[in-house]
Image 1 (spheres, one colour):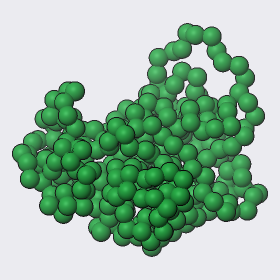
Image 2: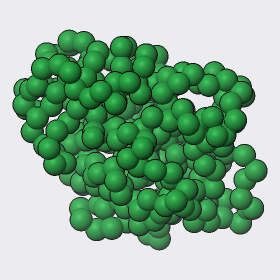
Image 3: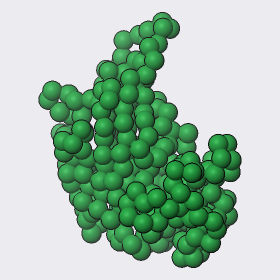
Length: 298
Protein backbone atom coordinates (compact mmCIF):
# COMPACT_ATOMS: atom_id res chain seq x y z
CA UNK A 1 0.00 0.00 0.00
CA UNK A 2 1.15 3.52 -0.79
CA UNK A 3 -0.27 6.78 0.52
CA UNK A 4 0.04 10.32 -0.82
CA UNK A 5 -1.37 13.77 -0.22
CA UNK A 6 -3.83 15.30 -2.68
CA UNK A 7 -5.80 18.44 -3.34
CA UNK A 8 -8.96 17.99 -5.38
CA UNK A 9 -8.82 21.65 -6.42
CA UNK A 10 -6.05 24.23 -6.41
CA UNK A 11 -5.86 25.70 -2.91
CA UNK A 12 -8.33 23.13 -1.56
CA UNK A 13 -7.82 21.15 1.64
CA UNK A 14 -5.18 18.44 1.71
CA UNK A 15 -6.37 14.86 2.03
CA UNK A 16 -4.45 11.63 2.43
CA UNK A 17 -5.22 9.12 -0.30
CA UNK A 18 -4.26 5.59 -1.25
CA UNK A 19 -2.42 5.21 -4.53
CA UNK A 20 -3.71 2.10 -6.24
CA UNK A 21 -2.22 -0.11 -8.91
CA UNK A 22 1.42 -0.57 -9.79
CA UNK A 23 3.92 2.18 -9.07
CA UNK A 24 2.66 5.20 -10.94
CA UNK A 25 -0.85 3.74 -10.92
CA UNK A 26 -3.67 5.89 -12.20
CA UNK A 27 -6.27 5.53 -9.41
CA UNK A 28 -6.30 7.45 -6.14
CA UNK A 29 -8.84 6.87 -3.36
CA UNK A 30 -9.36 9.17 -0.37
CA UNK A 31 -8.47 7.89 3.10
CA UNK A 32 -9.06 10.93 5.33
CA UNK A 33 -8.49 14.64 5.65
CA UNK A 34 -4.93 15.48 6.62
CA UNK A 35 -5.58 16.44 10.27
CA UNK A 36 -7.81 13.44 10.84
CA UNK A 37 -5.25 11.08 9.34
CA UNK A 38 -2.43 12.21 11.61
CA UNK A 39 -4.67 12.12 14.69
CA UNK A 40 -4.75 8.31 14.34
CA UNK A 41 -2.52 7.24 11.44
CA UNK A 42 -2.34 3.55 12.33
CA UNK A 43 -6.10 3.14 12.15
CA UNK A 44 -6.32 4.98 8.85
CA UNK A 45 -3.46 3.00 7.34
CA UNK A 46 -5.07 -0.26 8.40
CA UNK A 47 -8.50 0.76 7.11
CA UNK A 48 -7.27 2.19 3.83
CA UNK A 49 -9.43 4.18 1.46
CA UNK A 50 -13.02 4.89 2.50
CA UNK A 51 -13.74 7.93 0.33
CA UNK A 52 -14.21 8.61 -3.37
CA UNK A 53 -11.76 7.60 -6.07
CA UNK A 54 -10.19 9.82 -8.72
CA UNK A 55 -7.91 9.50 -11.68
CA UNK A 56 -4.44 10.59 -10.74
CA UNK A 57 -4.52 13.27 -13.41
CA UNK A 58 -7.66 14.81 -11.86
CA UNK A 59 -6.02 15.78 -8.55
CA UNK A 60 -2.89 17.62 -7.46
CA UNK A 61 -0.34 15.53 -5.56
CA UNK A 62 1.18 17.22 -2.50
CA UNK A 63 3.18 15.97 0.48
CA UNK A 64 0.83 14.53 3.16
CA UNK A 65 2.56 16.74 5.71
CA UNK A 66 0.96 18.84 8.42
CA UNK A 67 1.90 22.54 8.25
CA UNK A 68 3.03 22.26 11.88
CA UNK A 69 5.18 19.18 11.29
CA UNK A 70 8.89 19.24 12.01
CA UNK A 71 11.30 17.73 9.50
CA UNK A 72 14.30 16.44 11.44
CA UNK A 73 17.30 15.43 9.33
CA UNK A 74 20.49 13.53 10.11
CA UNK A 75 23.79 14.49 8.52
CA UNK A 76 26.75 12.19 7.93
CA UNK A 77 24.79 9.13 9.01
CA UNK A 78 26.27 6.52 6.67
CA UNK A 79 29.75 5.29 7.57
CA UNK A 80 31.01 5.38 3.99
CA UNK A 81 29.57 8.86 3.43
CA UNK A 82 31.33 10.08 6.58
CA UNK A 83 34.57 8.73 5.13
CA UNK A 84 34.22 10.61 1.80
CA UNK A 85 33.56 14.13 3.11
CA UNK A 86 35.52 16.81 4.93
CA UNK A 87 35.28 14.74 8.13
CA UNK A 88 36.94 11.71 6.54
CA UNK A 89 39.86 11.71 8.96
CA UNK A 90 37.68 11.98 12.05
CA UNK A 91 36.34 9.08 14.11
CA UNK A 92 32.65 8.26 13.78
CA UNK A 93 30.57 10.70 15.86
CA UNK A 94 29.25 9.83 19.29
CA UNK A 95 25.94 11.55 18.57
CA UNK A 96 24.04 12.23 15.33
CA UNK A 97 24.25 15.60 13.59
CA UNK A 98 20.70 16.95 13.55
CA UNK A 99 19.47 19.77 11.34
CA UNK A 100 16.03 20.80 10.12
CA UNK A 101 14.05 21.47 6.99
CA UNK A 102 10.95 23.61 6.70
CA UNK A 103 7.84 21.92 5.39
CA UNK A 104 7.71 24.50 2.59
CA UNK A 105 10.89 22.94 1.16
CA UNK A 106 9.16 19.59 0.59
CA UNK A 107 7.70 18.37 -2.67
CA UNK A 108 6.57 15.23 -4.46
CA UNK A 109 7.85 13.01 -7.23
CA UNK A 110 7.99 14.11 -10.87
CA UNK A 111 8.53 17.68 -9.73
CA UNK A 112 10.97 20.38 -10.80
CA UNK A 113 13.55 22.09 -8.58
CA UNK A 114 15.14 25.38 -9.61
CA UNK A 115 18.83 26.01 -9.11
CA UNK A 116 19.18 29.27 -7.13
CA UNK A 117 20.89 32.06 -9.03
CA UNK A 118 23.93 32.07 -6.72
CA UNK A 119 24.56 28.34 -7.09
CA UNK A 120 26.69 26.54 -9.67
CA UNK A 121 24.28 23.61 -9.38
CA UNK A 122 22.60 21.36 -6.85
CA UNK A 123 23.70 18.12 -5.22
CA UNK A 124 21.74 14.88 -4.88
CA UNK A 125 21.24 12.99 -1.61
CA UNK A 126 19.11 9.87 -1.89
CA UNK A 127 17.57 8.97 1.45
CA UNK A 128 14.82 7.24 3.39
CA UNK A 129 12.36 9.27 5.47
CA UNK A 130 10.62 7.84 8.53
CA UNK A 131 7.13 9.10 9.41
CA UNK A 132 6.29 9.32 13.11
CA UNK A 133 2.73 8.43 14.09
CA UNK A 134 2.68 9.06 17.84
CA UNK A 135 3.85 11.69 20.30
CA UNK A 136 7.25 11.02 21.89
CA UNK A 137 8.92 12.58 24.92
CA UNK A 138 12.07 11.14 26.52
CA UNK A 139 11.32 7.92 24.68
CA UNK A 140 13.42 4.78 24.61
CA UNK A 141 14.85 3.69 21.28
CA UNK A 142 12.43 0.76 21.13
CA UNK A 143 9.40 2.96 21.82
CA UNK A 144 10.59 5.54 19.31
CA UNK A 145 10.97 2.95 16.58
CA UNK A 146 7.55 1.52 17.42
CA UNK A 147 6.07 4.99 16.83
CA UNK A 148 7.18 4.98 13.18
CA UNK A 149 4.19 4.27 10.94
CA UNK A 150 5.79 4.46 7.53
CA UNK A 151 8.74 5.22 5.29
CA UNK A 152 9.25 7.09 2.02
CA UNK A 153 11.92 7.57 -0.58
CA UNK A 154 13.43 11.06 -0.23
CA UNK A 155 15.94 13.26 -2.03
CA UNK A 156 17.62 15.83 0.21
CA UNK A 157 18.66 18.04 -2.71
CA UNK A 158 21.25 20.49 -1.44
CA UNK A 159 22.62 23.90 -2.44
CA UNK A 160 26.26 23.41 -1.47
CA UNK A 161 27.25 27.04 -1.94
CA UNK A 162 24.68 28.25 0.57
CA UNK A 163 25.49 25.35 2.87
CA UNK A 164 29.17 26.29 2.98
CA UNK A 165 28.78 30.04 3.47
CA UNK A 166 27.84 29.73 7.13
CA UNK A 167 28.51 27.31 9.96
CA UNK A 168 24.86 26.19 9.84
CA UNK A 169 23.26 24.18 7.05
CA UNK A 170 19.79 25.75 7.04
CA UNK A 171 20.04 27.79 3.84
CA UNK A 172 21.58 25.03 1.78
CA UNK A 173 18.96 22.54 2.90
CA UNK A 174 15.84 24.60 2.26
CA UNK A 175 15.76 25.53 -1.41
CA UNK A 176 12.11 25.72 -2.45
CA UNK A 177 10.83 22.26 -3.38
CA UNK A 178 14.23 20.65 -2.86
CA UNK A 179 12.95 17.88 -0.58
CA UNK A 180 10.79 15.64 -2.79
CA UNK A 181 9.04 12.76 -1.03
CA UNK A 182 7.77 9.51 -2.45
CA UNK A 183 4.57 7.83 -1.25
CA UNK A 184 4.32 6.69 2.36
CA UNK A 185 4.66 2.91 2.65
CA UNK A 186 3.44 1.39 5.96
CA UNK A 187 6.25 0.36 8.30
CA UNK A 188 5.09 -3.24 8.53
CA UNK A 189 5.61 -3.58 4.77
CA UNK A 190 9.13 -2.18 4.98
CA UNK A 191 10.77 -3.75 8.04
CA UNK A 192 13.75 -2.48 10.01
CA UNK A 193 16.22 -0.30 8.11
CA UNK A 194 19.03 -1.95 10.10
CA UNK A 195 18.34 -5.15 8.17
CA UNK A 196 19.39 -3.38 4.99
CA UNK A 197 17.35 -1.86 2.17
CA UNK A 198 19.16 -1.15 -1.07
CA UNK A 199 19.20 2.55 -1.95
CA UNK A 200 20.34 3.84 -5.33
CA UNK A 201 20.52 7.26 -6.95
CA UNK A 202 20.86 7.79 -10.69
CA UNK A 203 21.58 11.03 -12.57
CA UNK A 204 20.47 10.91 -16.20
CA UNK A 205 20.52 7.13 -15.92
CA UNK A 206 24.03 6.90 -14.43
CA UNK A 207 24.23 5.29 -10.99
CA UNK A 208 25.91 7.66 -8.53
CA UNK A 209 24.87 6.11 -5.20
CA UNK A 210 24.42 2.40 -4.49
CA UNK A 211 24.35 1.38 -0.85
CA UNK A 212 22.35 -0.30 1.89
CA UNK A 213 20.66 1.15 4.93
CA UNK A 214 22.63 -1.31 7.06
CA UNK A 215 25.49 1.22 6.72
CA UNK A 216 23.58 3.71 8.89
CA UNK A 217 25.59 4.88 11.90
CA UNK A 218 22.59 5.88 14.01
CA UNK A 219 19.35 3.92 13.80
CA UNK A 220 15.91 5.47 13.45
CA UNK A 221 14.97 4.48 17.00
CA UNK A 222 18.17 5.80 18.57
CA UNK A 223 17.93 9.09 16.67
CA UNK A 224 14.29 9.75 17.51
CA UNK A 225 14.93 8.84 21.14
CA UNK A 226 17.78 11.35 21.33
CA UNK A 227 15.69 14.12 19.76
CA UNK A 228 12.76 13.38 22.09
CA UNK A 229 14.88 14.12 25.16
CA UNK A 230 14.99 17.78 24.11
CA UNK A 231 12.16 18.32 21.61
CA UNK A 232 8.75 16.74 21.99
CA UNK A 233 8.07 14.79 18.80
CA UNK A 234 4.51 14.83 17.48
CA UNK A 235 2.50 12.60 15.22
CA UNK A 236 3.16 13.71 11.66
CA UNK A 237 6.80 14.68 12.21
CA UNK A 238 9.41 13.30 9.82
CA UNK A 239 12.97 12.03 10.15
CA UNK A 240 15.25 12.09 7.10
CA UNK A 241 17.78 9.39 7.94
CA UNK A 242 20.79 10.57 5.92
CA UNK A 243 22.43 9.83 2.59
CA UNK A 244 25.04 7.23 1.63
CA UNK A 245 28.34 7.85 -0.14
CA UNK A 246 28.48 9.05 -3.72
CA UNK A 247 27.32 12.66 -3.45
CA UNK A 248 28.49 15.13 -6.07
CA UNK A 249 30.60 17.50 -3.99
CA UNK A 250 32.89 14.68 -2.83
CA UNK A 251 33.76 13.59 -6.38
CA UNK A 252 36.89 14.55 -8.28
CA UNK A 253 36.04 16.46 -10.33
CA UNK A 254 33.03 17.77 -8.45
CA UNK A 255 29.71 16.92 -10.11
CA UNK A 256 26.63 19.06 -9.52
CA UNK A 257 23.18 18.89 -11.07
CA UNK A 258 22.66 21.34 -13.92
CA UNK A 259 19.83 22.55 -16.10
CA UNK A 260 17.73 19.63 -17.37
CA UNK A 261 19.35 16.91 -15.25
CA UNK A 262 17.02 14.17 -14.03
CA UNK A 263 17.58 12.45 -10.68
CA UNK A 264 16.02 9.12 -9.70
CA UNK A 265 16.22 7.82 -6.14
CA UNK A 266 15.20 4.18 -5.82
CA UNK A 267 14.78 2.45 -2.47
CA UNK A 268 13.95 -1.21 -2.11
CA UNK A 269 10.29 -1.71 -1.05
CA UNK A 270 9.64 2.04 -1.27
CA UNK A 271 9.85 2.78 -4.97
CA UNK A 272 11.48 5.33 -7.24
CA UNK A 273 11.34 9.11 -6.91
CA UNK A 274 12.13 11.30 -9.94
CA UNK A 275 13.04 15.00 -9.93
CA UNK A 276 14.12 17.33 -12.73
CA UNK A 277 16.50 20.22 -12.05
CA UNK A 278 16.30 23.48 -14.00
CA UNK A 279 18.22 26.73 -13.95
CA UNK A 280 16.32 29.49 -12.14
CA UNK A 281 16.02 33.12 -13.11
CA UNK A 282 19.16 35.32 -12.95
CA UNK A 283 19.68 37.31 -9.78
CA UNK A 284 20.23 40.97 -10.64
CA UNK A 285 20.80 42.09 -7.06
CA UNK A 286 24.24 42.80 -5.66
CA UNK A 287 26.26 39.61 -5.38
CA UNK A 288 27.12 38.29 -1.94
CA UNK A 289 30.62 38.52 -0.55
CA UNK A 290 33.07 35.67 -0.99
CA UNK A 291 32.02 32.41 0.63
CA UNK A 292 33.42 31.49 4.00
CA UNK A 293 35.90 28.63 4.22
CA UNK A 294 34.26 25.23 4.16
CA UNK A 295 33.25 24.66 7.77
CA UNK A 296 31.21 21.55 7.28
CA UNK A 297 29.53 19.59 4.57
CA UNK A 298 27.05 16.83 4.70
